Length: 438
Image (cartoon, rainbow, N blue to C red; front, side, top):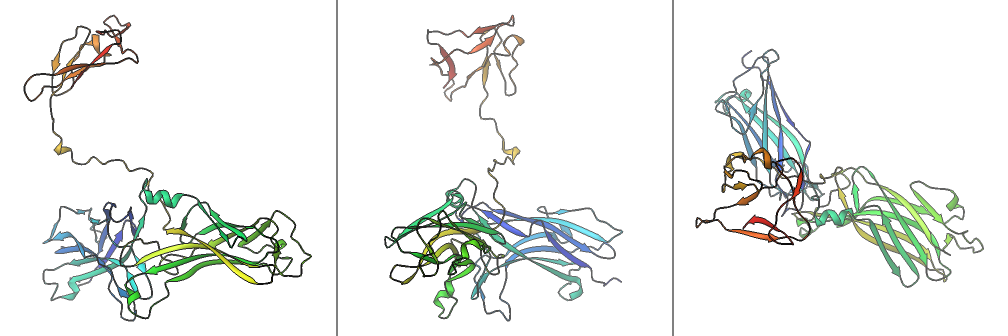
């Protein structure tokens, strides 16, 4: 059947784009993948285009798209010819399979993917294939495949942002000269769909305080253009929480996952007030289960149309000696990043060899009777001075060679004479001089 429709597949190499570094310093990310067209027999392809573009608003979704990234296009096939930026793989005529590879650069200052009730930033990858130049008149000759793709950002290795995020979490504060509160964790980084463990400590400064309740919260704050639209979602909300009630006297012995309370003393039971009497330090450990991204939690975004930040809140409900109940909170900033880290080091890339040029030809000579050779390639030294470090002479623009002797006092250079035995290189002074070119 000449008009039977084939099947178009768009397969990115990675399901998302990860940009390393802040928007002002991040390098371009590479988006690559494969395009597969399956038909009963290979067909001539008139045009094949891959587009990376922001996702538009949906019909029944009240959120508005605030992405400011323009559409990017990669032409794979034009007028039946594969472009220089793409590659056509082997054609399987038996299976009717045609395949191409594409690649495009994504700017480092692109806005990250985020979803809020009032606004969102999302991207999609679109492949459009035409098997006839009259595809606008014959719809069956045009096919489109759409794949959603997310843009994420992580700190660049060795940057100040990475150093701040990797440092251990350690925050403390004093409440009304009555209680010292501190919170600690192994890092300020939390990953979505994973657990984040934190530890809090209460240190009494006065007597007669009792602990009724302890909790850890992971709060998320969003800031964007929807704040000026009147009605909007609250700026902050809790995305993960673990609570431990200590009103019953037997609560410390009965562990309630995911929180545990550790006392380095025997709690006082003479008092009829509920809770645990804080006579010494009380340590509370909790585990927060961070939800999956783009649902109940978003990644941290520092700049852009929508900004997202997170904080860890350690709260304790206490009752004082007068019977008044107080809720004390200690908050500190944390980061929610996608799992996986940037490489520890990025080696420089050497790509364009055709631009290599010789700036100047060097002159080599030996100190053991070797012949001076001037060449643009390797020096043709004799076997008698193959172990002697060479000196260099560079011709100045005026035509004369400027040589100088740099004194050294830390030792002597060792060479090898013609007989094969080691000897100290000669010098013109007691301290010694090294011949170098200036």
